[in-house]
Length: 345
Image 1 (cartoon, rainbow, N blue to C red):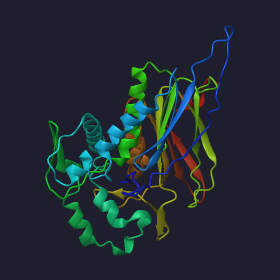
Image 2 (cartoon, rainbow, N blue to C red; image 1 turned 45 degrees about the vertical axis):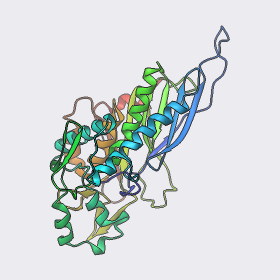
Image 3 (cartoon, one colour; image 1 turned 180 degrees about the vertical axis):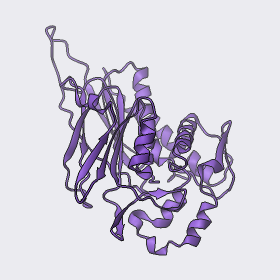
Image 4 (tube, rainbow, N blue to C red; image 1 turned 60 degrees about the vertical axis):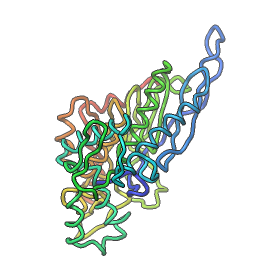
């Protein structure tokens, strides 16, 4: 499984170009000024947050306070956070942010038979970013780590996280950024804000219209085998209205052995890289937390299992881009994907 944190293999690659912006001023017969669109840019989880919204006043302080609260719950790089205290076997109670992400992660872990697993960080670190440590990996080391890796080895009792093995480590970076988008969306809903776009580390939640009065428009980038990340081509343009989008991919981090391409995605059940031909998985859902976690899970599941599972989930919308013969790229779309290709523009 691929974790989305720079400390825990920041190997979630962002395949978006935001085709938005430019502000509006006076409009309409009554020459009443439209609500102004504000743009808040801050850092969270070692990535950027770009948030646009229409409201009579700027809400930067409220946004920052809310995101700081989430980070103090689940940032694994700060030893004062709840997740760090859990990992260090300290006595601590989980807050609402932590509980929401933990429960969703465990739900998806069960649905994927443990392919998605927030306890997998030790195995991922063993291989190293871009498999830099693969020559040091041995079956013995993998077996040693697997003794305390597994989503069934940790549970929530009230507000206490109970670990079966004190060596077990949690990392929720594959779900926390998407959840952070939901947290800000809830903040906006409380203010009655109907037009906003929230992007955190490439995970997106949008509602209403952009400053041009159009549906928020997002470009999904073609997964080109370009490790520099400088080549960007748009595969699809989608319209997001009251919807969330998360994309995961591994096409810039892989290795080839015996003519087979292995993803930079670890299967926590085996401890070895998963062999899958999905190059990017874009998942659309009502909440960004769900989209974020499933996008990660589908990369490890592979194409056939991902399609089979996704089609069983009511309302799940997806676009999987995978490698065909030679250099051919192919798509698999959910039956309802085409509705995202139409917008008010």
